[in-house]
Image 1 (tube, one colour):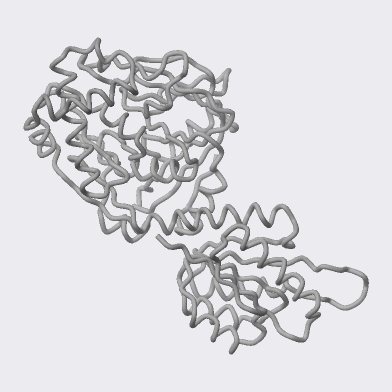
Image 2 (image 1 turned 135 degrees about the vertical axis):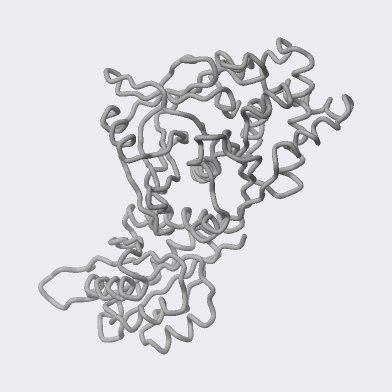
Length: 447
């Protein structure tokens, strides 16, 4: 989707225009290095009429509203009454403090602008604020992060989530209403019954599924150790899921897994989900649609495959938390010494499932799109590192050493009623997730 970044520099002509013009040019140059196609005015907007004329020509997905100088609330009101997109309010430091004239008074203008935004959009509305000159490193950092997150928000409006089947009994925390997803995140939900994909899978011939077996063998180890019938059934499911996501434009998938695929099909879907993840279609199990949405957000921000699983073991001495699931982790996350090995399900003793510990990383982020007891969305965010650990339990595992106290995090997460599925992203994306929470007006809980 085309992304429209619009720069809106406001002010009045009674301040020091030489200073304002210099900062206007520097701001434009910085924004164009970050987003070459951004929309900028030919000159500072020094009257409400000039501002109004400029706004008639733009259709922003993100607004950079900058007080080049002081401007009263009428300027900001003109902006917010027209557009509902995210705003970054950019305040400039006074360029000179020499006992003489106040050159810009941008800071007072920011108070005026922020007051207008809050009064118009509501006291619970959140927006980004930057206080820096365009030559400061923090300016580039904050602008880059905000643009990146705004692009993701824009991207979510074209995201189609796929749901295969429904959540098992007692796993209702993963259920989602399509209207709520669209209202808050902009994405849509496509649903299909698990039995429909099973019936499609059963209809394929051995010749039709041969390419899927070969593809799987090129990415995982030990498929030959699984009984032939299960390998054939796995490949049939792999083809059925692959065609479903391709034909329906699905980029994130939540799939029912037990008991249907064990009982009605005789083969788990775990390895199929693992390979879909490796191919860039994030896939959660146990039909957790908010888990799939969490995976998509984290994957897009980290530009890397992510882990989905349960917190299962706390190590207070190491200040670490182990995440585990039966065997559907992205096979590209496997440790290099073992590779993406396959095995059988730890409870059902049927394969193929994935069996490996995950690669280490010096930075990681634990994340979840969750719901409060009142039904409000919230984001769980914690930072740490992924330790160099072998597989901890049958299935796939990943061990995170947290920056905060692990025991306190576990206690607080439990007593606050967070869901039992979490995403672990490779890399530090905590600031981006906080920014996304602001743009979506979702409360965040950062540990």
